Amino acid sequence: MILKFQNNPYDIKKCKLVGTGHNGQVYLLPNGKLIKLSSRINSFIDEYSILEKVNGNKYFPQIYEIGFGYIVLGTAVCQKTAVLFCHK
Figure 1 (cartoon, rainbow, N blue to C red):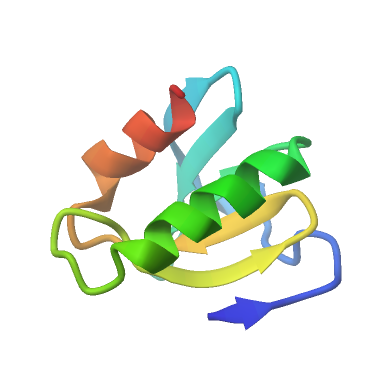
Figure 2 (figure 1 turned 90 degrees about the vertical axis):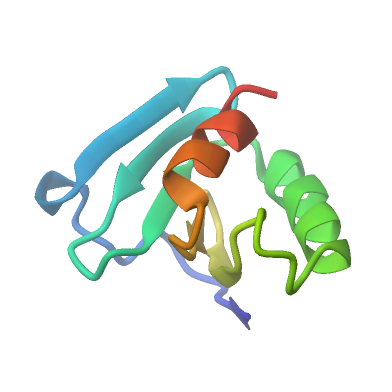
């Protein structure tokens, strides 16, 4: 996992919206990974701590990158899982 202390470097205009919720929006990146956007940094920290505990479980997405206002997730089962994470 890469922790970046920068704003979101991805161009959301090139991404497809996958889902929305009270914690943010999830988009499919051109590289096949997912990006979740939110202004709730604490929710990303909470999500990371949960996903770190279930790392390697095929039912949860892998975290590739986290930064200010965004988190990049793998896509193994992610399109459905990410929407669930979006709707806490």
